[in-house]
Image 1 (cartoon, rainbow, N blue to C red):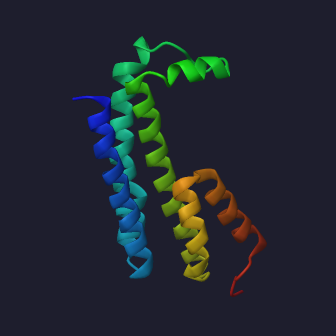
Image 2: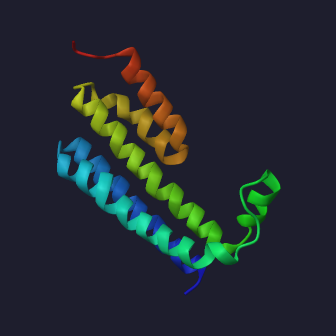
Image 3: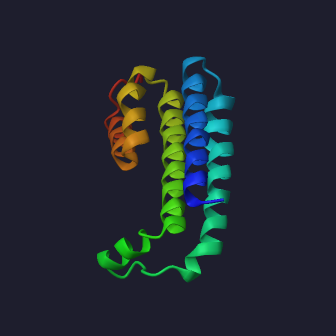
Amino acid sequence: MTPDSLFAVSGPIALAGWLALAAGIVFDRPFLRDRVAGLLIPLLLSAAYTVLILIFWWTADGGFGSLAEVQTLFTQGWVALAGWVHYLAYDLFIGAFVSRQIMERKLSRLFLVPILPLTFLFGPIGFLLAQGLLLTRIGDAS
């Protein structure tokens, strides 16, 4: 097993979560949105991340004390894979979280059209956009 082989598996697992999230939204199935996309798959990815960190963190060069140390840290395949899995888990979790927030507020699901791709590609931007929407109450029925 190599970092590349696990990388090749991690993407489709995350994609399955995003597809479950989309199906949960389109077909109004909270189980898919909240449990599969919002919990089960992020937990699976988080467990993989934990194993990678427990095994490979201690022998890795670099650290978090400076940008140069972070760059060094992520030049190592197993640690870079752990970082990638971290992104996959949290972006999916945030996507499900903001979807749940928007749907519970009874806002139009159309708001999720720009938010979810931005969350998928650039997690904090999608989160920021969703929270801005919720704070300004745009589209709120009340």
